[in-house]
Every structure is written in structure tokens, then in C-alpha cells.
Amino acid sequence: MVSRVRTIAFQGIETVPVDVQVMIAPGKVGMNIVGLGDKAVAESRERVQAALHASGLSMPPKKVTVNLAPADLPKEGSHYDLPIALGLMAALGAIPSDALDDYVVLGELALDGTIAPVSGVLPAAIGANGAGRGLICPAACGSEAAWAGAEIDILAPRSLISMANHFRGTQVLARPEPMVDPQPADLLDLADIKGQESAKRALEVAAAGGHNLLMIGPPGSGKSMLAQRLPSILPPLAAKELLEVSMIASIAGELAGGKLSDRRPFRNPHHSASMAAMVGGGLRARPGEVSLAHNGVLFLDELPEFQPAVLDSLRQPVENGESVIARANHRVSYPARIQLVAAMNPCRCGMAGEPGHRCARGPRCQADYQGRISGPLLDRIDLRIEVPAVTAADLIAPGRAEASETVWARVAAARGLQSARYAALGLPSFTTNAHCGAAMIERIAAPDAAGAALLRDASEKLNLSARAYHRVLKVARTLADLDGCENVGRIHLAEAISYRIAGERMAAAA
Ligand SMILES: Nc1ncnc2c1ncn2[C@@H]1O[C@H](COP(=O)(O)OP(=O)(O)OP(=O)(O)O)[C@@H](O)[C@H]1O
Ligand SMILES: [Mg+2]
Image (cartoon, rainbow, N blue to C red; front, side, top):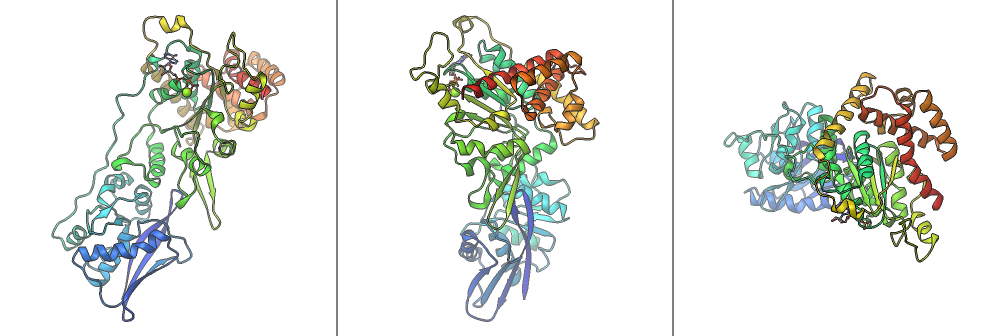
């Protein structure tokens, strides 16, 4: 007799149905798993046998064959333990044979028969719900699965015994509740930063429009401090964004306690990060930092210290909002719509351009250091600002600067205008100006006559690329939104162009 259990394989954040078929037949005693499984799937045999034994079920002295269909789809991960064990229990008559018909099953087994958490439960639950089925998952992941919808049937047992008791009706499992991770009360506040008014303004503009930002300045001027305070002025995730972000975190196994949070991701990988860590890949084609920062911020501190190849691998995700991992036999893509924020010193000694300072290695110090960042990556950064050393007067001045709460309100208002505009244009997938398409931005950020003349002059003088031209328009649109203006004026364009100039100087130096 063959018993069947439905489970899934992951391809990015998509799920592909997999059928676990278990057959017990006369023959050589033993258990075999076939169907292109990886090492974790092969080892599942030992865990399943031990867990069944610990739950009081002994393996029959027969030949047990487990087939994972479709046979040509690679199966990776430990989540096949539970469907295999439940399939065996059904074949042995320990649970009713039709009990599993309406469920998708995933979970890892411990040797004592308890069910251990696995990654990817949220996308699995969303996939199961879409197919009109329920989900059986580990107890620790139940609240994560409950986010897939109010109507989906979820069973989150702690062990194989509690699963069997549920089907027998002796101990019915309750449906888990979705849980929220509350916003931390101790977010760092912008009020701690003295002086640096223009840098704070640029940070506010970046937050309002979702623009990429590069801060260049000497050591100790507050660049890292500014970036770390960006989360305190970003609006919370909208419901749809929250699900996307959480699905990626779920696949990466980073949803602590199965709780979802409406905080925007803020990832700051160390500069020793490899390409696989940054854009995804490695074992099981895991999402990289760029995808974990989806709908949030990817902060690269000490930008030139990253390997140039790793930085250039960001070019495609930053432009397209998606990170594609090509494997020999398949291709996986993860969403990666990020806001890139970076900080760097102008040269290796860090002091180039500071009044009264001369680099020991002369102009080469700056050129060599800045040359590590390729022009195309720089071209994708809308706001480039210089963050000079804080003056003594600013440091000593009494009183606190403007608090994050006040800036947050202005950012939220500007973001509200943007989402209303894109919804009215029938483009609800755009939420910020930074991610608006080129044709659309020309329409919605058409400057007045004076602005158009300024833009023409600046484009010629600065030799702006077509991308740079559109990015200036996007920043100008955000500046107008922050002012609550319907039209983009000369003043907005002037400020937007000024944000590109630092970078053009840098490119010239390199
Ligand atoms: N504008 C500022 N207001 C108050 N404190 C500041 C400011 N700038 C720097 N500091 C102080 O200097 C310390 C270092 O700042 P931060 O790490 O942000 O510098 P940085 O610009 O990132 O330097 P580096 O280039 O070396 O990374 C902070 O912890 C803070 O104590
Ligand atoms: Mg720093």
C-alpha cells in the first residue's frame, strides 16, 4: 500500500508541490529514500526511524521505500522529515489514512520524536492557502504560519505523539495565533547628532523618497551615527510589504520566535562579506543581505573596503529590485528592492580635503581609495554628500537637535503623498519616487520653465548620464513632496543637482 503526503520544495520565495510517497512491501528489510534529495534528506532516514521508535512505533520488518516526486526536482533541507514520518505512520495505521489529504506538511524531527522548527513556514503556509489546503508545521512556527490568512487550517504539534493524538481525537490541537514583534522603544535618535544640518537634511530626503545615499567624510564626523539613526525616521511597512519581507526572512530562518514585525529591515553587513552573502547563493541558494534588506535599507559602512567584485554584484539588484542566483540546473530569484546607504572616508588616511591637511601620499591617496568604487555603482546613488568634521562650536552648543519623531512625521507625510499619487495613476506597486520608472518620472516631475533651463545647463556641464538625469528628477520630485508642492520648481531641482555634485567631483578624482 502506498500512502501519500503533500509537502513542498522552495524555489526562491515560491513553493513547488512535492509528493512524498511511502510504500511498505515485502523484501529486504530497510528504508530507502529516493527522489534527488540532498545530504539532509538522506540523513532524514535516521531521524525518522529514531523518532518513530521514541514515539512507540517500531519499523516493520519489511522493505520501506520513500519516493519524493517529481523525481527530477532537487530537494534540499530537513523539512522532509515530518512528511516522511507521517506518511509512514499512515502506512502503518497509526493515523487514519485520509487524515493528511487536506494538508501540506513540513517539519524537522528530533531523535526523541519532537518536531523542530524549520525555515520557510510562512511561504509554505501562503502556498498551501492558495491551493485551498491546510498546513501541518512545527509548534515553534505555528504563529508564523497563522499570518497566511484567517481561514487556513493550521496544525502545529510539538511531537509525533501529539499529532497522532490529535487525529485520534484524544487531544485536539488549538489553532496558533499570529504574533507581532513590537517596535523597540530604544531606537537611536537623530537628536544625539550635533551640527551636520545638511547631512541630516539629506538623510531626511533619502528616507522620504527611498533614495540611495552616499556619505563621504573624515573619521569621527558622524557618518555611521547618521546611518544608524535612519530606522528611526522610516515609516513602518505596509501590510503587503510586511508579508514580502517576512517571507524572505522566513526562508533565511531569521524570523525570531515566528513573530512578524512591521519594522523596515536595516541590514549592515561587514565589509568582509562574500558575494554569496551579499546577493544570495551558497547552500540551498539562500537569500543574501540585499534580499534581506528588501523594502528597507542596506547600509554599507566603509564602502571602499568591500571587495570591488562584491560591490559590482549589487549593480543589478539596485537597478532592477531583484537578485537572481543562477545555478547549474535552475535559477532562483529573490526580491531586493532596497535603499542603498553607504559611508566612506575620502581617502585611506581619511583626511583628504580637510582644511590644513595634506595627505602623505598626495593626490594618489584619494584617487586609489575612491577608485575602488566603480563608476556604474556610483551612478546609481542619487544623493552624495560630504560630511565634514563637526566644528567645536557645534559640539559645545547647548540643547538638543531636532528629534527623530518630528522628522518622521515629515517623512511619513511625503511618503503618503507618493503612495496616493502612484495609486491614483494605477501603479500601486510603486510606493516611493526612487522606484518609479523613467517614463513615469518625466511625466510626474516635469519642471517649470526656470527649472527646465537649470536642468539643461546642469546636464551639459556635469555630463549627466541618462540614468543620472532621471535620478535628479526623482530627487527633485521628493523635495517637492516634502514641501507639499504639486509642481517641481527650480529650487527643488537646484537642491537635487547639488546632491550629485559631490559624486561627480569624486568620479573626477578617481
Ligand atoms: N555630529 C556628531 N554629534 C555628536 N557626536 C558625534 C558626532 N559625530 C561624531 N560623534 C562622536 O564620534 C563618534 C564616532 O562617530 P561615527 O562612528 O559616526 O564616525 P564616522 O564618521 O562613521 O567615522 P569613520 O569614518 O571612522 O567610520 C560617535 O560615537 C560620537 O561619539
Ligand atoms: Mg563609521
